[in-house]
Image 1 (cartoon, rainbow, N blue to C red):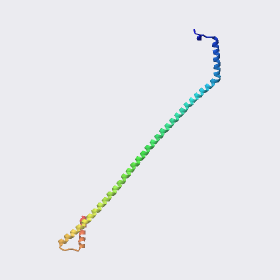
Image 2: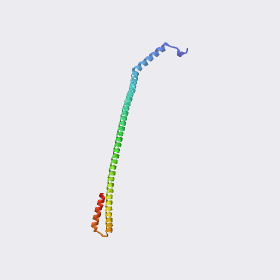
Image 3: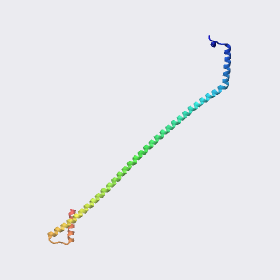
Length: 164
């Protein structure tokens, strides 16, 4: 067997004594700072996880609030659109009603104008008729009556004809 594999009792004892001294020094001076460092690291990781969870919860709350605001804004927009449509329909109805009123006024004016023109035409026809009757009567009688008498007779005769 090679020499480095031989087991010597003195070397084993000194190795155990050195290891015990090293373990004692590490336990006395190094264990507490390592344990505190690991605890601090564990605490930092736990705080980071809690902070991330809190941030996630806040982000979820903000997202829900944003969705609610968007839904509210959309509902408000739809109300505004509906109100705009109803106002537009009301304006169209009012314009149609105004157009009907104007149309009726124009029809009434046209009817009055037609009646006035008809009355004018009838009066003109009566006047011409009276003149023709006077002329025809004077030619038939061979003499002429007074101008006023002719017109009065013709007017009476036309009035009598229009009554019949």
